[in-house]
Image 1 (cartoon, rainbow, N blue to C red):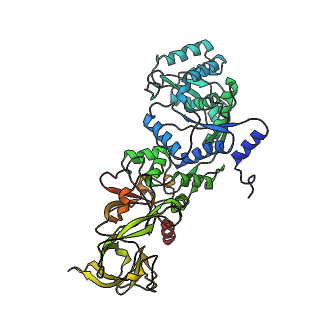
Image 2: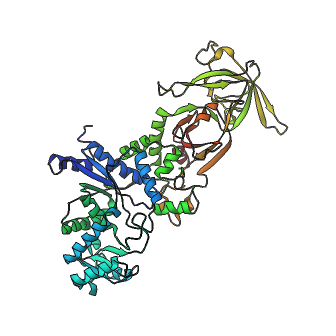
Length: 553
């Protein structure tokens, strides 16, 4: 496929703008409100805005839309900055809408002086009623005809704190019969006596999003202001304000949201999950937040790959979570260190073993020729997975059974000679013999076996806790289901394993490391690892969820 044909609609617009000489370079921005943690929907926007200015000459600003002091916190600002940088992007300028409060106030005064804005004393209920309906025009009220002088006086009194919250608003004076209801004299300033995380108590009036957004874009000379589809009706107001204020003509473009199945991506709903303790904070590995995915072991490379694969379009779709997991699995397969960890141990005693401990060299990652090898201790007492032994196996069971033989990964072939049980009939130990000539890499035994098992030496093994994560919700689109979305939470989304034994190399695990636990999946060290090792399952070796869905259909 040619480069030209592979362009998305925004890239086509930008290339035309550059070729025509409309712009010599482009400016984009990522403008989150600091009222929560970023999620995968934001990741799409981040990759889009920063990706465009990596591909084309220009730069991207990170601008916080901090016009609502009640819900915004510095904690969220810092988490958003961390997420953007972790994804691999750097902004040219760090900006806040609050940087422009003085300038935005002057813009509002300019509209008043032009007879294009007025102070309205109506209640919010009255304003809503006066706006009419999509099929019926709105009606003008008595405040719409206030003089410019009176509006300037009242607006300054609002700024100086004379009136309580809700007593007055400033509205743009456009057309109460407009077919676009957002153009029916929209509110552009409201009174809110609240402490702001950056400006403190300097202001008690704050601009509405529709007023702050386009004007901030213009101040920063943003050429391509990229929003999601719900802002299409807002574009007319965006353009009207820029035209009437006679400022830099930023232009808004819209693309469709990309939602993931089996989760929710509404900040309000995610905040409910956190506040009601359904999850362990914003960075719970089951959350669709970027911080949650980072804690789960997802890599920025995998998330960028996912965003590139799904692309952008003008129609909203529900994306398969399994596609994101595929991208994660693809990247981790290349970089993850291989380690052996036994989740549900059964003891194996090698009865003809006479050595103390033998140190074996086992490769770290067969997909990476530069990864090297590690030393793994092998002894006469081992753990293997309980599920890797069956006393009465079915046909084509290629693991261990009485009289059967298997290879231990990177080590020797063993044969099961005896099954030891307790008084209740539970298997407690397998007595085996090993074939000395069958050592991996130097096998002269001539014996071929079909099964290879992972293992750990008991004496040298270390204990760990494993957290196995599954989908947070049981239904594909919990937001569209009837009733409370929280009623669809998957009760088995977290499983804890505590009787876990790992090879000793994991003692040196770092938070930045990614591991493949052989035959188990991909894992990373969790932040709760204080005095004990805690590993989170990132993703399985295969898409087990797809199999479950198919089986249940």
